[in-house]
Image: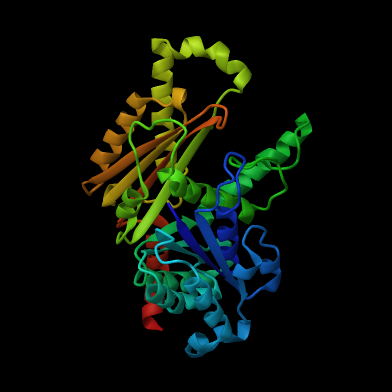
Length: 379
């Protein structure tokens, strides 16, 4: 899928930069373009993968006068950049932003510009602030979420409270392992080497991994998929579906030296059962533990499943069991699924990604609306 990403503010810009970052297994980013707009020049300077001409500084003073936004030079620059892309060059536009940030106020103006210059659907990927960021940001986030939902074709929700807790746990576990001679640098799937990383950066990597898997779902694969999933099916799953969550669970496989030893077992009845059980286990993790925001997925109108990994490790029995489970669980009747078989020389993990769209209940969103909704209405 060809994607144009617009990162707003510090959170949105860093997420956009993480999405287009080349991974160890793929350096293909020609189908993804990114633009960053922020009021912190240091953040823009340290974005590694977004091109310099696609970084735009937005003066902080301008945010205080929204009626002037459409006449400001920065907005005109962004508009010119958007018009520079060829018609039909992208399948969709993704606006990334932190809901508690100030630059979310740009969304109405930028979405209006995008609608004028492009016919592709526009989605938002937003992060809900953690509790530690304060009540003022949480209240603003809920107000901004209502605004964003009314402007775009779908909103992908990531709960920073959930994912910061996970990231800190992962980093703490890595620190504890230093005593056993392991590096103090953290490794994340899809990267070629270990590196020092902060909790928020690790959260951004988790976000980016999910989006990249979706983007590459429609590409020509090394293996022959049992079920093809193209960009149109992905877009049909999320367009017009309001709240969206994405779950992803992955499992590392034994190194190549052990594969030959295990191959005989994998061809046995026990081996086939183990591969099927792995797929089901990963699906449960993706839905209940590794979801972008906890939700009642039984309220979803649509769902999508994407299975990826070495061809010999993908179980059609497990895949069909997961399809049946999700199809029978969601409220709607549209459930799409596909697989991406790859060579074991290029991938050493099995992944399952599950998208729920048209959700009526996203737990943290509902909780914050109940806590801050009345305050907003009374102001």
